[in-house]
Amino acid sequence: MKIVRAEELGFCYGVARAAEMVESLIEENKKIYILGMLIHNPVYLEHIHQKGVITVEEEDFLNEKVIIPEGSTVVLRAHGARKHLMDKLSNMNVQKVDTTCPYVTKSIMVKLREEENKDVIYIGDKNHPEVKAVLSYGKPIPVVQNLEELKNGNFDTNKEYSFVIQKTFDNIKFDEIKSYATKTFKSATFKDDLCGATYERQEAISMLAKEVDVVIVIGGNMSSNTQKLYKISKGLNENSYLIGESKEIDKNWFINKKSVGISAGASTPEYLIDEVEEKIRELVI
Ligand code: SF4
Image (cartoon, helix red, strand yellow):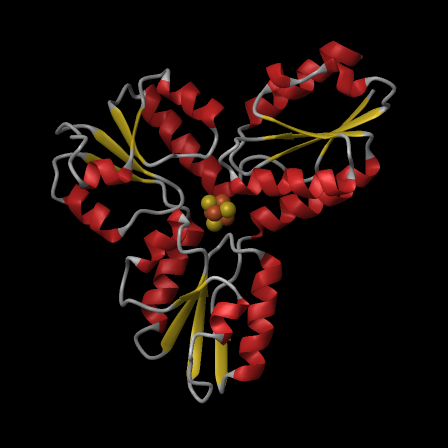
């Protein structure tokens, strides 16, 4: 059996950085609280919870349903944290460890700079934690989630607009909006760009799914980018399977098959990918 990994798979830069920061805090034996899900991967979360890390819902912390003790270490996740959450932590006697991805921090800086002189429109999914974090800084600005919302938003076509974008926004929807805005408004500037991590993993699985007999996608059920990878793969290769970890592999998937491809979402750690590859070897080689 030939086993091939997708050219791009697993942790993106920002998630890998956040996980490394948490792992080194664990080694320092700190009492660690993470606000919100560090990573959309239940297997990985269970792994760090077993090492004593506690995940607290952001709303529970803000509403004081959960009290974080003085002297604790509080980790803010890679997607970024809302300003009022940061402010609340700054008034507490805790060690704040901000793992916000530098690309998200850049987005916040672009928003703040652009809105000083221009009308800014934000493109993104209102419910995404990154979007909530970015929008919590600076002035309230309009948000559009797709081209229809931009068309129906009563924006003045004679004005000059600057656009700020959710780093993980869908690249096809983004191209539609950019093309419309450039043609329609007196001026439309895009000072920031999408993060390539999601798109690169999608491109890689599109190629892989056509080359192999079976595709295994590894990732959490709550991870939207993992779900998207699985959907793309299933559309191109009927023998595609989505799993959270190696024990879910069924050896019947490989009967009369000669090759298997492996992909993983941006919140899937390397060790889970290695375990899956090892399990396939055990079953079929
Ligand atoms: S997807 Fe991109 S912007 Fe988001 S955390 Fe990963 S590297 Fe950062």
